[in-house]
Image 1 (cartoon, rainbow, N blue to C red):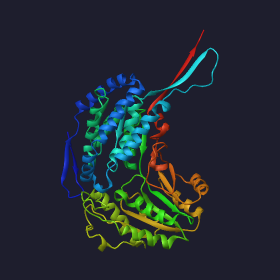
Image 2 (cartoon, helix red, strand yellow; image 1 turned 30 degrees about the horizontal axis):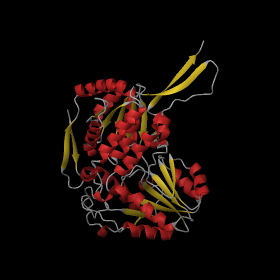
Image 3 (cartoon, rainbow, N blue to C red; image 1 turned 45 degrees about the vertical axis):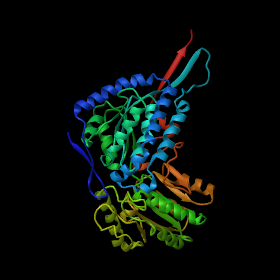
Image 4 (tube, rainbow, N blue to C red; image 1 turned 90 degrees about the vertical axis):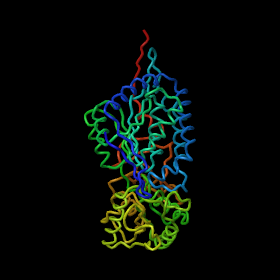
Length: 460
């Protein structure tokens, strides 16, 4: 047994301590999940929808407590109100589309034959959630997995360990069959052993590339299917015809919201040469208006990073870029809360950057962004694709046809026009290259959580 401890980035105090699950509890959980899943799969879809709608309602009722609780665990300012607006949108959408998404596929009629393909549940689904958006990322898999007739085991991140308990409380309020949903406190080794056991049918993991490789290695040989959302280095391109003020405002938010700790946050920006100087000036001016401080303070717009390790990575990337000739535009005197150590990291904007610098190539997951000048769409596209990652890319333009044309050349799971850092539950959430494999949300997301079963019935 190991203690899982959440240390607050606000002041280094202990927020919560939980003991990891003993082997006997893990085995009992798997056994109960199998039994519950068989029962749940026979319950009509409409009844499952009622239960899961009750779960969503129960979760939303906790929002007032969850917002400061999240601030204490991972540092997001209470000013921004938590995650439940997106949580609700995603959950209710996946519940709504389930009847159509899970309906049988019926090919053309053949005399004397009844033929169809059922989408049957995979069985037991393990959801390994991250700390940066612990409710939003978990709900992407938890609700559709249950709607599809599966049982779910949730492993919350150590940094947001209380999130799993919130899920469990809301599931209890929804009166699901015993054992259908379980929040388990697991170490990395526990998770690895669980996957290696072959007793998990599908695993959805959101986290780092290194973590994804560990998940893949643990599941190797078991034929457990995987959904992996891993690293990102999401780019934005501001074309000459962009709505200037809109682009500046939204890209500052896209780069610095949640202290840059967003899966699809903007980490590099390419600006057409005709707008470049003006864009940098306006961008920097807006960044200077941020207030770095205690996330429990309503005036704070930029909280601490979740961990000291993450903060040190950001500082190292900035120092490396400056040593190689980058220009830092934000003066440290504006953000005295950043002492150069610890979790409080001031926002930084870098120019004179290039792809020889780690800040433009390696995920930083923090409040820093590099801005480069480009001459045309071709150069912008080449630079956007010069990355080992491919989650999202954002194009800022008044020309939708141009955005679609450029988008076809971009190596990313989602292409945005005039927005960024948003997940539409009606669209497939996916990535390419080292960003991972698989799909969540949308009708396609249900295909990851079901198996095809064909019926070929001949009348004699």
